[in-house]
Length: 362
Image 1 (tube, rainbow, N blue to C red):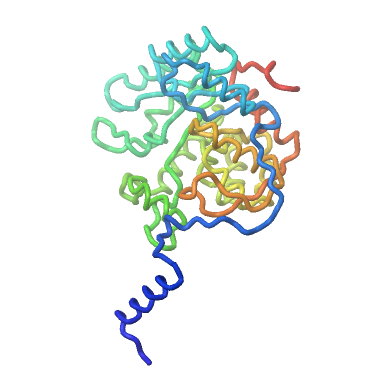
Image 2 (image 1 turned 135 degrees about the vertical axis):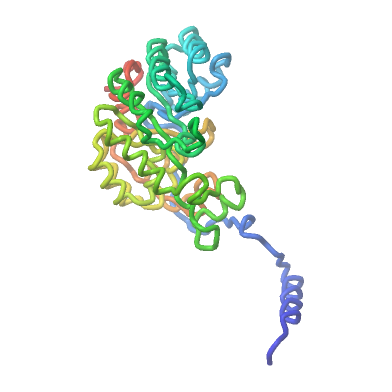
């Protein structure tokens, strides 16, 4: 017997009434796992660590005591505040640190790329960077707005590898300070918004994150510009934020690590990618243990234990803390102590100048 569409719907509604079911969206569907496995949450890092990707936007006037208290519960030795800004604001942040917790925070400077193309813009930017480093900045943080938002005086998008910016990257190499750069966003943000997109839920709940090849450029173009910059400046040390958005393709990331020995990576906001491929991730950490740094990105102390659990434990099938970021389960990498120490603090101590090594074991 062939049922009409209306009849089919009515039968479905009746079935739902009889058996107590209700309509449910994918956004709501978040079942508890029935799998019974050992659970070993890690609330505090095994070793003191350096968060290379921290943000404290109010640091110039902020009471840092509550931040320190939270850091201590996590075993965080040093936070690198990437939102140091420049000029007077950076000076105020440095003074606040020196007056209260001189060995627990450092700041990276930022550059405002508005005005690229005006007379003496490059020279002025380099001079300000030199001044900021002299005033206490330990590195330079570049936001994703470079390559995605900034336009020059002719109205053209400023590419990351724009030759007018080359003196900035060269100056960082000369001064011995690293450049931590966030370029683009996950490639899925550029992919069609359909059922095949693994980030569908994130784009559904955060529609402003959707991009296209003309908004502002293709993902491949922006990432290529970043790699061009790395290759043009082999004497400058770069830290590629979010593993360069290749944590879901460690084979490709390995090729890039080989091609660009001055590129290091940090794990902010991509721990869920590592946690769903524990064996491959473990091999990657083994091979590149001297070039991977711990980073978190957003200052939410309650989210750090997820990172510790992935890195330190051998737990199986546990959830990420944001369903819209990762609806899959994760597994612990169970990294050996020597690799953990490098990721947590040794690599950062080597790359970022002037950090207090006395806070960390040998």
